[in-house]
Image 1 (spheres, rainbow, N blue to C red):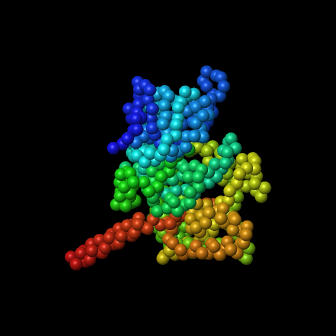
Image 2: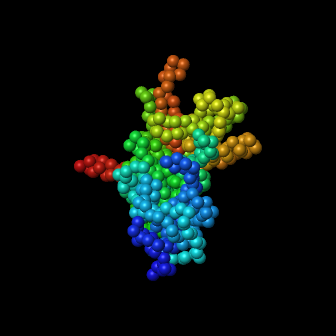
Image 3: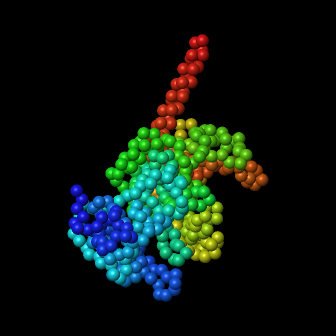
Length: 466
């Protein structure tokens, strides 16, 4: 049985409770920030922590001005404290993810004493919400999610308007409600190795702020939130079983219009390379998109004996994308001095791959210009690695690229687009996306195709026998 050790249970706190003392563990904390009072005066200071007691009661504590100065360094995540002399107010649901009706405001009268670690108090508490419920939430809101990582983008770094160097990564999350949503990770969480997100792990994310733009919803993990793997909550087991038992091939309802590309993202017609070649030779009216399962055969590293560039430096300064309602990196090519003609200045740059790749399958082969994200996947190298390796040894770079030939099947998205060149119409073929084949999904697809072929054979033989 939980032992409060003479302290008041958090779940029973209200504005009518007097003389209380709580004993709890700090499960998360936000950054210290300054603010200007609405009535004027000197700038103030505030930070918040979420605390959890042995009975599972959780509440947010806000420390202002003198209390912020006194306890800023003391209140560390994971440590246990006794807290008293605070005032309660109704919780602000726009920012507060705890389930408590109230939150606590501490000022100069606050008493905070560190106590010995209490094994009865959990390290963190999750108030999980499924994505179907997110679709009907009043926005903006902050909540906790549990879902499978369907896909993820590569992290990229940029400089914000106020001069801060930032790194972000988008992941596409889905759960057993058959909904999906894009969630943006920041900083160290975005910089985690790709292998952490590979294999469709089920994650819990605490403190996701969800906003809406043009009927599309997407999330962003707060600085005081948490990205958690290998959790034991019942929701984790449920989502994992759903994904294994058919969820991976189930059609998802997308809450985000601009989610990262994943196994479902490229909406193309299934085809082989021979069929793609036939379409290209006949020509297309505007453009067509195909999904082809094939392998990387060759990357063009030389042309007529001259080394071919495998990357270019692209501007990473943020520019407003009005269509999406967010700021995105410019990504336009810069000159040798780093100057971007589009932005009109020299700023932060990053290498982006642009490869000429030959793909092959059992029916045919073909050359396709392959762009950054897909190019990084097919050669299993990030653009920064390519740039660094080339600066040391072009020969070593080409050797590393050759090591990726025929290693694994990829699901390649090919765009066939009509273009006019020197007055003649032709079809331009390019690879706009490539990712390792989801083996289980592809096996199910092939099994389904085999069953269809067997059914057709039976129908044909039956008709012949009649």
